[in-house]
Amino acid sequence: MVTIGCVGTGTTGSAIAGRLASAGLDVVAWNRSAEPLTELVRPGHVPPPR
Image 1 (cartoon, rainbow, N blue to C red):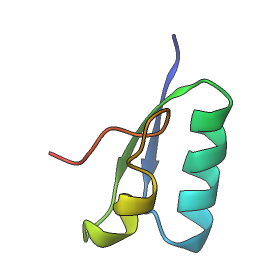
Image 2 (tube, one colour):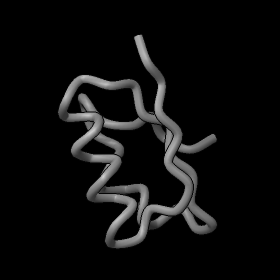
Image 3 (tube, rainbow, N blue to C red):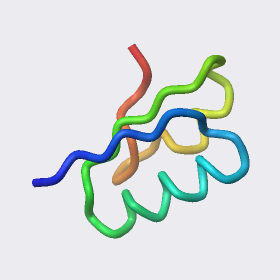
């Protein structure tokens, strides 16, 4: 499986990461603050930040 990294999950980055995850790709996302990642952390989307 292909793993895609997304740095920055603001308006554009979160939309891109969500669509990639919905397409079945493994997405790893990072953002300076954890709050924007909460919308992406759900089944079928990106794993929670560490």
